[in-house]
Amino acid sequence: MVANSVETATFAGGCFWCMVKPFDQFEGIERVISGYTGGHTENPTYEEVCSETTGHFEAVQITYDPMIISYDQLLTIFWSQIDPTDPGGQFYDRGDSYRTAIFYHNETQKQKAEFSKQELEKSNRFSKTVATHILPAKTFYPAEDYHQDYYKKNPAHYTRYQIGSGRKAFIERHWYGGEK
Image (cartoon, one colour):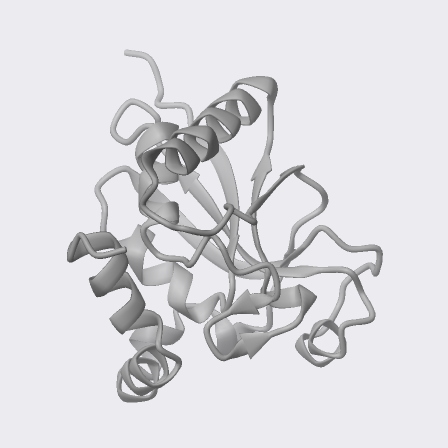
């Protein structure tokens, strides 16, 4: 019997609280960690990242079994949770740390990410250009414990945040409602 191998995917979709649950609910996802990546500061804190001086994005790192869920499926989940045309953040979270990005861990992920971005642009789903970055993976720093699995620890606040930020309405309108 061959042991299952796991792979890693890393996505920045604005507030990392809102990016855990969409992935966490799928079979084949072994772990989703909130954290920081892409910047120049080692072991940054939430406050440092929010200060916009570290270069880091808020991101999630996903450990998954590619025999159960593919990287292409993860890309589809990622795109459907964000406004890919917003270069300045996501919803009411503004600043570089809230920009969107796909951090690739190997050449195959890079090619698949670039292809998925091109397909999204060609779909004309959005009238603006896709602003999501595709970048090489860098060191990923897990966020503080109170940020991990936030939707489970604080479900009422998580729901209010998702609605109040405009994320929920945007996703329903642009990804599941077919409007442009």
